[in-house]
Length: 85
Image (cartoon, rainbow, N blue to C red):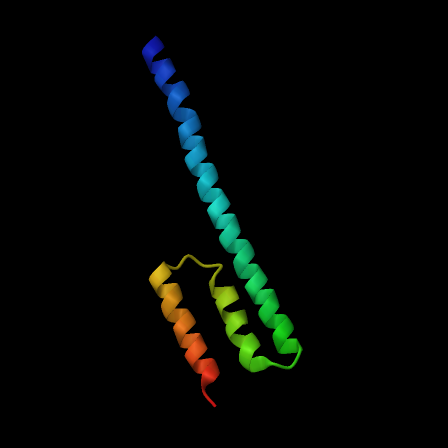
């Protein structure tokens, strides 16, 4: 019984630390996505839609769980579309 209690006491902080790390990463991603969306909107309002729309799109998409490769492909697509005349 005492061994089980000691195991639980050791495992609980580790599990909590893993969860806290995950929450911190997700909060950072959310904040960066929000900042990109707001910067894109400000640039669009300022009259430079060719630069602001890709930032706005990437900022909005960044809020959703995508893999790193999907994010890179989306960024490349939006960048290429913004360079078209």
